[in-house]
Image (cartoon, rainbow, N blue to C red):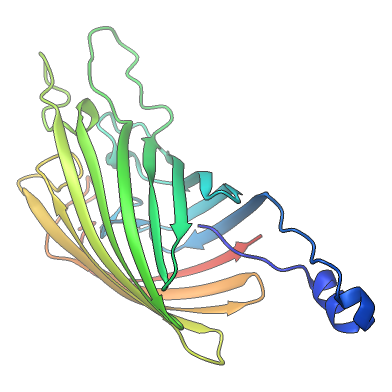
Length: 265
């Protein structure tokens, strides 16, 4: 996640300096910016499916952006061990590199690639060819009109062993690919710290990212957030049209209400 900040000192100076000083050229914006987030959420759901078996997750991220539009990010979250093949992962680390450009008329293009890493999931015995880490290029187009914006996104994970359905079996793994299409709408309520969001996504498989016995499924969510300075409180409802039973007997894909508290810097 990326945020835009303004220097309070520079703002005060601009409003109090003499007229002659105001005629001077404004200070150039920094070429490189660093932003971060830290969040606690009641359940980490990835495309509608819980990654923490319905439990709390701790998340955080950092983004380095260049004035040219290029950026790199690292984002992490705690997860449950059933998320990966070997059932040994307790963290997810997302490494991201991309390019973002805003055109005239409120259109923004964002393209890049996301590499999912699950530390500690490498098998410790010879002959196991399974994998958990995978890469997923993405592209999105956002159109904004005042406080309202709409975004269309496509994520495509090419064929790779981490998405295969026959992991844990002997022999050569059959690689699979995956496509995720999503639409998002967000709106900031004028003259208030409240914003609203809506999301609809569809996952095409079959692959490790689709619940077993299904070739595809749909997820959706609606939410609201309250922002005060750098603090944000959020609530949302997330649902799907599929079931995914975890080793503890919980349905990780069942619709539920989520709450979160986060800080940005």
